[in-house]
Length: 291
Image (cartoon, rainbow, N blue to C red):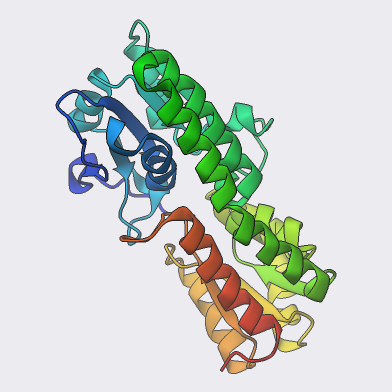
């Protein structure tokens, strides 16, 4: 995302997304709200979950940690952070504020990813299943009295992903090999699972890494759209770079379906619904039914 101004952390309210069923719940802090959602689904009424980034209208890459973020971490027994430079502010806070007995789930480690890999790890349901399993283990460690509850919660979350996995398998059968293009690699892991052939990866990486795409990369992207060499354009609906907006306009002018994807789970949704809704939109676009 080519943004240069950091959004003040105070402008982002820390969102409480789970209410405890009793007076002394396990405090869980998630850097992003989709991880917080998983924690809520696994922990149920035994946990109180705080998600730092929760507004789908905000660009996560503009976040700057504030005193409220540090305060939220102070009493956390379990913390979930994505890693590989997606939320470096959280990693810095954790390093600066060590806490005895605090469990820290680094999603990149669970996914066997390293710095330089696509950081949008949650677009692979298998990674989220691993997060759910890790939560089941870590919550049981800090709150052994409810171990069985957490084990059931992790198992239920894993089972709840089966319809999503079936949707992915069905779409792969229909669309594997279909050419698409993307303004950023937000949807990258899901596109890989679907077997899509993603064009213009250099352009997408440049935008993600806050660098200017080369003239040749811009020209190649435009050529794909104007030449109808791709079936769909994917774009990050939370970004607003003029260069990307221009490409979206070109795609629309060329009657190429445009599908927005996001980096933050929408309010009043769940991870499962969020992913399914985006897949439904892509399915409609690829099938030629998009208006």
